[in-house]
Image (cartoon, helix red, strand yellow):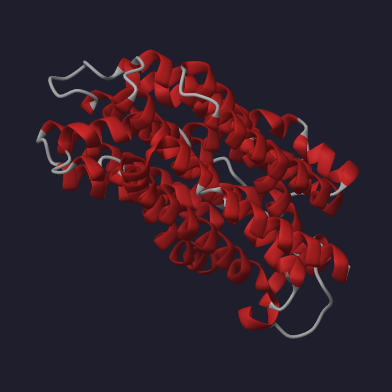
Length: 391
């Protein structure tokens, strides 16, 4: 197998293990928060701080990669995640809500590192295979979707404090991810290897922002992630805490959602290469709209399940399309700057969405909570319309 192809495989496997952080925290973070939080409105705060940690570390992470290379930062990120997992287990044992929240924020740093895997994979293959490489790396999320919640439930009663054992197991998984990354071989990127716009001196981010394709790509990922996280973060609280559905049913819904996020990666790269990123973005927005309709139709287990499966599918189409479209807005020497801004914007939006979800669902109810997502879908439609018109 070609050396660069091996790197894509390594990144997929390392991501499969490292990404277990996200589904585990989404599944039990709100439940642990409900037990430890001083006020019920703060129950989803740990989940929100996972995203906040990601958002605020994206720019430093990309800067470190520029200085020390991707491989060193990738390995360090996985080890850092293992340490954060052990701190989370300790905080739960001590009944410390703020300690647990801080530990989860540290895990968000590792997710900022993992988000760079997709760009590293795209840089490891020729331009005509970039979409497939990006979507292939995201397939690691399939393993994480199953393994993360299973680790959470399996570790619930290992120690006296519920779920502290779950994070102890997570630390071991993160160390396995670090071991896998020792086999990653980063590639040197030349100007000819990227779908860049023109040549010349490196441009400022302000100049790059003036391109319509830049905003279509960035907002596709940002709105896709924000709406997905907004609904997903509140679902365990709505299902298990407010509607009294079982923990097993809640786990099944979250696992199905995360599977739906990553399963389309088997073919979404091909669909982009065949039909274009713009068309797949539109399909993603339509799926989000249908998701809102299903969520408004009831609060039985199957309503949650159907809505979150559609949410996952829509996220994949929007996020992969935005990721693949982004390199068309920058030159090779601008990649760390633009990738850093892109991920900071994406995860800042996601952080705001996660942070607000708990307060909104407790104060406005499920139906109004879901409807609040609609204006953001309309915003992406408007931006896409102007991009197509200018094209």
